[in-house]
Length: 290
Image (cartoon, rainbow, N blue to C red):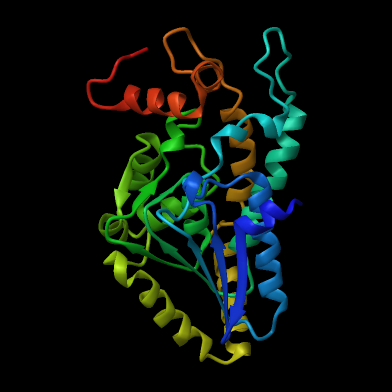
């Protein structure tokens, strides 16, 4: 892993708390796969440190995270946009998606309590991180959701079970099928985060909760997490990480008809920004069909 990647996901531990910070503000904290690997290294470091009682996750700058870096979409499978190139095999897709979704499962079952502090945009993989956290506090004006679902998946998220349990089946389908974002206040109202606060109070609110957790006995925290894991398993939460990677493989291997928006083709022709604007424009009220 390059030194640059190490600098993009920062780790600090003090006073019973570990802090993991995404530091790529110039790209709105879009996460490369290398950055996500680094994120998981930090999670494991915090798990091994007996002095750490709670983990806080945040983004440096304007946003929590705008999700997976769209410049890498397809590269994980070896996808090539060159004319005549063969499509990636299903086995290659399955292998990568199984690995990546298991990272989310590992984070979901982290042995230390986790708190996400959300400002600005928190979409795609950024929203997955928040959903996999134990607690989440959002700024009132944060923008949280799954607009990436408009690109290929239309509801085939890694965290489908969690979304249904947290939001109810209809609200979960609304969030993923329409691919809309909600602000922090609405996210708190529907159960996507625990509460919303003014942006200037976000860090203090996270510290206050973390301090309260850090005062708990270590064994009490560990037993509580283990009990939570068992309860999640009894609700079928583990299964979402199995169907999640399979549905993602299927969802990223769809066939586009001539009148449908093909993000990969648009990215090749217009770049990431142009392709994203074209995608969003298509789904605005009154947007064009092509």
